[in-house]
Image 1 (cartoon, rainbow, N blue to C red):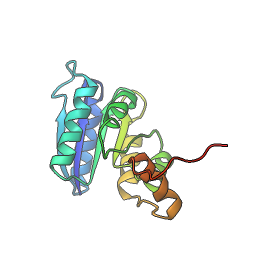
Image 2: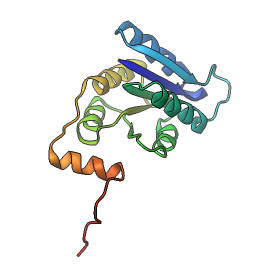
Image 3: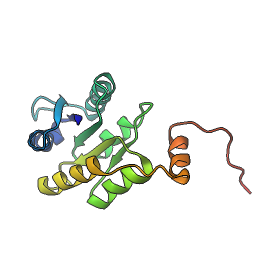
Length: 152
């Protein structure tokens, strides 16, 4: 798989750890964002990551900041991105199955490296559930709504 890994300064070490690990698994890895642990804004890292993800037609992306929250929020501002901040293997699997997430977000201050590796592997290996109910919901996330739901 082709993967894009992006981070700000607070996620730099975990991004590098995950990039090295992904390469040992045989993935083609592109890293963007912070070049060191010097201050680097997470919105900029997210924007660079999304741009590279789209331009390179990557399979998935993994974005890392201190908590995973900020970089995830910014990534989700981009059309076609379904980013999920996951802190467990179960969350990663559900993000792929139910939400068809294409960007995994992690927090270096929240998740230990070994757990982050497990979460990333689960995310990369889980298939989306394409049954009607999940596809309908993903279509709504993507803005493909034909008519608003009637509220009573």
